[in-house]
Length: 293
Image (cartoon, rainbow, N blue to C red; front, side):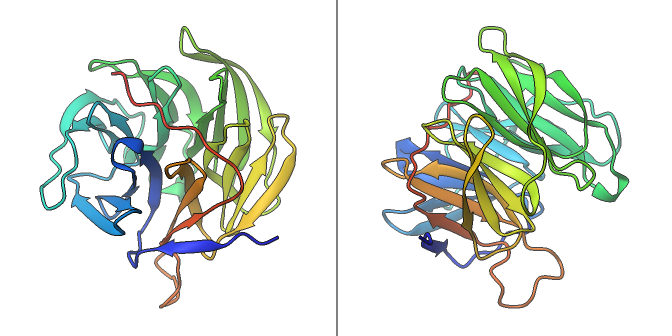
């Protein structure tokens, strides 16, 4: 049976990424990377707000009553986002990139509140392996934990926190890995292939449901796939935008899947590319852990 998909608002993002549901104010947040903006949709009122940023933010996470933002040259913190008031991020931890023209991309917190985020060379045609996956335990330090990445994506944690998922969405790789994850030390190990290749599209952002299902966006396929914890594909959902970027569960019952997308430069006028969507896939998610650092 087809799943009904609702478009949210009329805004179009260059690269809509990192959707996060914040239960405290019953709202979805996300970032438009090239648009240098943070967005918020509050379902109860229908209000959509946005804030300009000084740099591109690849991903965000709740931090206290404010936010943690992984931007071009490091992590930044900002206070609560209030409509019609500016967002003023303050430097928290700088990153020493391994190549020119890099920024942060996909990221989120583990179940213990450590913030994880990957970096990439923005010019994907270079297929640079300079990308890293960093861990932030707090303070002004970042620890590079996984190297040799081109476009790190698909970061997620199993419900018990003991499995870390990570994809590389570059056309040269298109693979999703699973790691054993030491929840005490915050260290991944025993990397193995979880999804060798999607049925269609490249693996992009992801979310995990309460049963451990891994929902991964098929960029260029306009589709979201659900894989069981043992790596079996058991469902796919079509979305009316080909380049779906990331998904996240939210809503009062955590049963709404919020999906962001990308609008390429050659998008047809009037197309939904770059829009955001909401659907009820028949699964419930888990609330995102806030950053403890």
